[in-house]
Amino acid sequence: MNDHELQVDKSKLKTDELVQIALGIGAGIIDVVVISTDNISVKEDLADMCRKPRCAFYGLSANCPPYVSGPSGFRDMLKISAYVLAIKIDVPSGWLITDERLVMMRLLHEIVADIERSAIKLGYSRSKAFAAGSCKEIFCNRHLSCRMLTNNGECRNPQYARPAIEAYGIDVHELNKTAGWFKSQDLIETALDKASTSAIYGLVLIGY
Ligand code: SF4
Image (cartoon, rainbow, N blue to C red; front, side, top):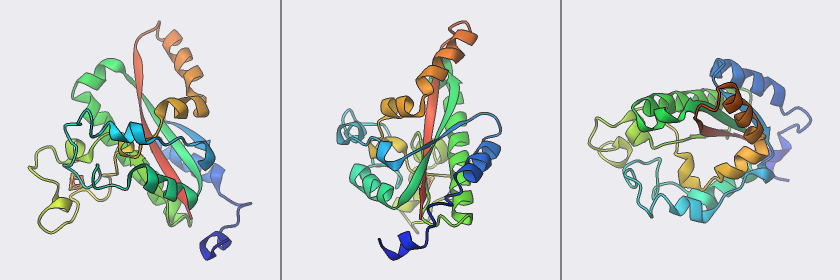
């Protein structure tokens, strides 16, 4: 056990407190589930999909490949995490092909970043948030270049822009199963008379 692990009292992981904080930040639009780090599935072939077929934002942001640590880096981050908060926002599927998609993704980035900050304040100094979508599209679409990759190297939106979850090969299908969300999705669809719904996802690694 290293020095960092010794500082963590594993009987007091503040899990319930952090979930309540996350639900408060999410203001009724998010689902939050606590997941063991062992149950997060990370796959190289999923991360490779940023490159082939090439995402329109590949290489355009410091928070996207090839500038992020990918699946191997994510596994290293899991090793220094006590647990993971999985975050989901349900959206009408039609929104994902309109500008509403960017509004919701921006909201998701803002929520997971605020949860990350709360975890750090509670003592989990190496907490780290991830969210769906490229911050280049979400926050910097009107700018030619990512500022972290050019000029003075400072992010224009450090408070909220977070790395793209897709870049790390997170298996969202497995995440849905682990979180028990397939069932709730079925119930939502029944309640909406089978109206089509989709979801966007974020993760906050509660790192110590
Ligand atoms: S400057 Fe813009 S594109 Fe670059 S990391 Fe920050 S938010 Fe993302």
